[in-house]
Image (cartoon, rainbow, N blue to C red; front, side, top):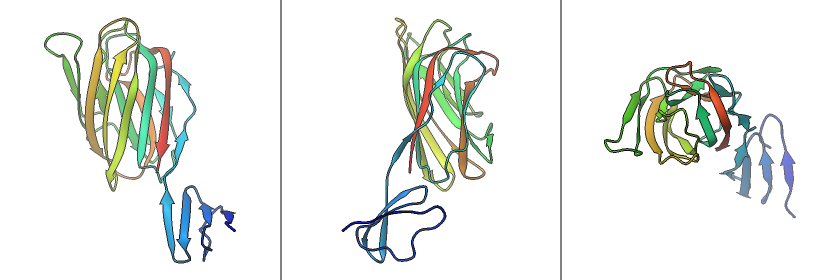
Length: 196
């Protein structure tokens, strides 16, 4: 018979075959000496992106290896671009990124770059953008991002972007803001999914 063991601080010293243990993560055991971490996906709390200059997801667990940022009809008050900043120690990291994005809405493919965060092109106050941006751990505290945002408000706009950053510690927060820091969110919803 399989056993479900819930622990708060440490794994069980010796697990019987078939145990599943919980300590912030799920583990499956196929022998007394072997534990294998099982991937799980956790959904954050959706935030209405209808006011303010930033949206923050804080107190993220240390075991995260992948985050999906979900935009649903998100719009800005001006023509700035979206900026996603990963952080450590409760504070968003605002430098050290190598990031670029472009819009394929018009001839010439307008583009933008940033060292202050993962940048995703917007540039039009009348557009509402939806899509997923995936931020993945490479090794240690190095994270890469890539994603696409497409207009849901009738305009022809697809923003694509990618970037990388080496954080100074374990990722524990994420901030979605703008390049100029003054444009406000005025439409839509943002949420995250994270997994180990």
